[in-house]
Image (cartoon, rainbow, N blue to C red; front, top):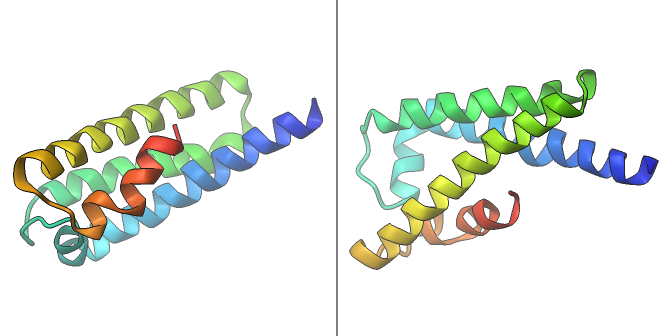
Length: 116
């Protein structure tokens, strides 16, 4: 129905598109602060890689209104794999390093589980 389509499209644009761009800004432009919030040392080159990945799926989410369901599915798969992979890393950090920082075990972790 139109309601379900609109709800899915809004999820794609905001939960994937906008949040991807926000994540990219954090990891690319505020990389040391992002690392500290996750309990990781500042200055790590992984921030650039994560930031570019966020940027990629953020752009995909923002492009969804102009493309069809196949594009939507590809966007969902990419973002879901990234988010679930990040959730696995967060769990490993909690178990192995007792890392309960807000950027590792807080709302970001919850979103990595719920959004996909």
